[in-house]
Image (cartoon, rainbow over all chains, first blue to last red; front, side):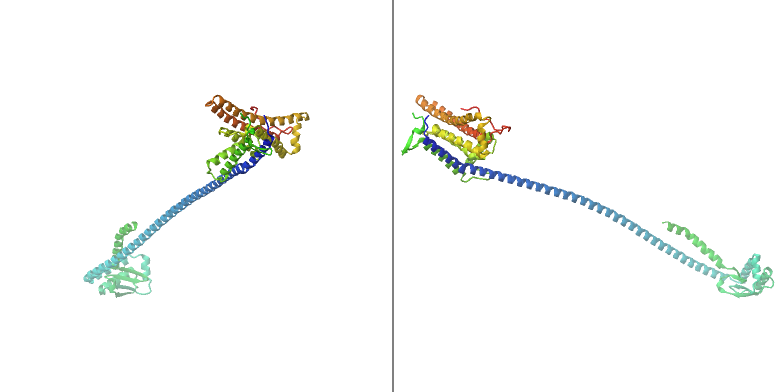
Length: 255
Length: 237
């Protein structure tokens, strides 16, 4: 248990020097290095967290954008569908209208053609029948026929109503009897006698001839016209022909 | 048989002696300082680091953690003093296995010097932390009657520090020396291994006790303030 105080003091100094040396070369550098490393790691972690946050934000942004695009796409598709439907129905309507128009035009043309045809037919028929009748009657026409026609006219006068007879009697001008052929004197006298008997003995009667009457005879006076000729028969023929075409017209109108 | 390395004198001049204690202390100091300097010369601050730097970081971190656990304070100001106590004593004791080496801690002069350092460091840290008035006041607490006992306690624990370390290391050395003469081959080695363990434990105890004394001076509880400091280890050798 011996203590050398010189050694003790030397050791105290040695220890203090060692404290300084180790502080200088060991503790400070090591702690500084560790602190810096820790700082570096913390910085990196912070940086990574920031980046993660940033990436997350970006992700959300893009997701929102994608959803938005999806919605827009749906809207556009729906719009396009709607527009296609509208166009389709519009085109269909137009086509229907055009068809109807074309059909109407065609019907009108058909109707016009038909009426033209009927008119032509009637005209031709009339002309043919008229020429046949005219020729036939011309061939047949003689005094006897004239006489018969005069008789027919006399019968008509006979069957005239009383007012009409009065009208004939009260006419200021003479009664004019027109025929296709010149009437023979006996026929004339017979006819004049008949008029006098039926209408009145004072009535003046003139005679004239007109080839257009087609084998007919007519009496004009006091604003009245009493006639017998083939035109009436021909008119009836025309009426019958038109009636015969009516079913055809009805059928073509129905289609 | 020499008991203390103080008595091994290599050089003497005019009353100044260069004995084995001082020489081996210098050796240990050189080893620690140069070793630290070599390793910390190019420290890595990135994630990759050398094994030796890793070792140093483990040691420094371990000491800091121990100081923080004992003092419940920021270990920064106490690390150089307490850490150096531990490293010096541990290194001096571990080198005991080197043949011809005389542990400086086996000299009462060295342990007394270290204990004196602690004895001085306690009031220095205490006054630096709390101010002279408040530091000195804790000597008369709980009553002024305790003043002599507090002073005696301070002195006796310093002596105990010095003698405990000295006794343990010296006894280990002496036992090995005695056993060498009795059973030369196997048994001394076992005792030497035991001496290494004892040396480490003593280094730890010395450093922790020093820290406890400093902590008690820097954070002695105020009247009515809750005691947060760790009580000193009761098991002391």
